[in-house]
Length: 465
Ligand code: S2G
Ligand code: ZN
Image 1 (spheres, rainbow, N blue to C red):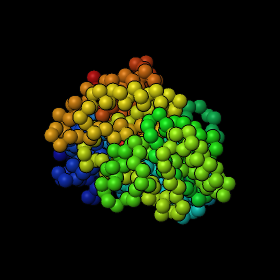
Image 2 (image 1 turned 180 degrees about the horizontal axis):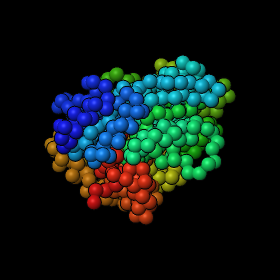
Image 3 (image 1 turned 45 degrees about the vertical axis):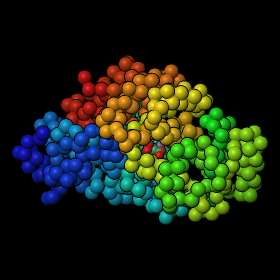
Image 4 (image 1 turned 90 degrees about the vertical axis):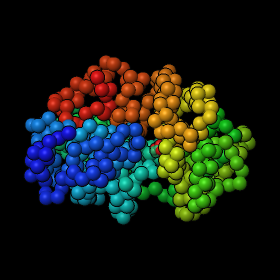
């Protein structure tokens, strides 16, 4: 724990009332959406400027105080959890959109800007910020950059990384770096901006981000299709991708749909009960595209890959179909799920799914397994729901024993043990299933260059020795 004299000194670096140490604040700001580690920070500090962030980092280096970055606290790998007396640096008061350039189609954001705030700002300018996911209403741009957030539109628009034109960061040494200067083309050595995207706050703090926007999509239209089994999903992807420029291709199982129907606030897509469902989206920019979609649907039905389906005819129906997918995460959180977020190249998905499903069926015979995710990107969310009769710790311990087989299978298919949620603390002990020991040594060397005193979010990404 950081001693009181140091906390008093910390208070002099920010505005009055911007260092909190009460139990409620320590609990609220010391965690994210994971439930694996108890939050135990020493204090929460709220900087309002780059200069204040710089002063905090210099103070932390001087006194060897560990700092944990905190944005919207929607993370799913405990990367923003302060479990060991760290000082949490929260960006809730650095939440302004500072500039917009119509010609560059760029928006300068402070790290505390909410993702949805940027999406709405873009829409008001007749443009589009295309990175979207269930927690966009509370996640912050700084955290999205720290985890290279993906979400539901990656198949067309890529990850957050694709939309960062420039960054200002405060490194773990307390230096302010202005990275890439928002340029589209800049061949002047290492692109240090890319190192900070996905670094989970282990190299320094993002203190300003220039985000790029895209043209607004035309008449987004969704289809939900019921399939008879896992194996039918990828042929459906290939059939639709051959004829349409998809903006999304998601899937979820009947168990996921049952949980959504249990809410009572989302209409069923159609009457037929199916084992699996696909949600795909495209721009129906003209009649021909919509007809291509319907023709492809008919083809998939003839091939036996699809049992039933529906296409949105209005904005409201589009939103209702997306609720079937986007509400899954929040809805199943009531069952304290054990989460895996795994990925392989799209061509390997069928074989990979078969192996993983067999492992899950053999090892979790009495657990409720919920499958969903961004299958068009090769990214699957495997969630095991906690049975009533098991405590959280007993349940997580049982699930962790199966991790070995799941991650060995990921390794066998050259996949990732964390497709989009990051490593944080929940996956740090499994990193070697996806990264070689030599790679990990290079990553540690990069961290040492930016954070020589190891004050930046220690214990995240790398296993604790
Ligand atoms: C999703 C959200 C977090 C989770 O719904 O795509 O990334 O796994 C997830 O519940
Ligand atoms: Zn996801």
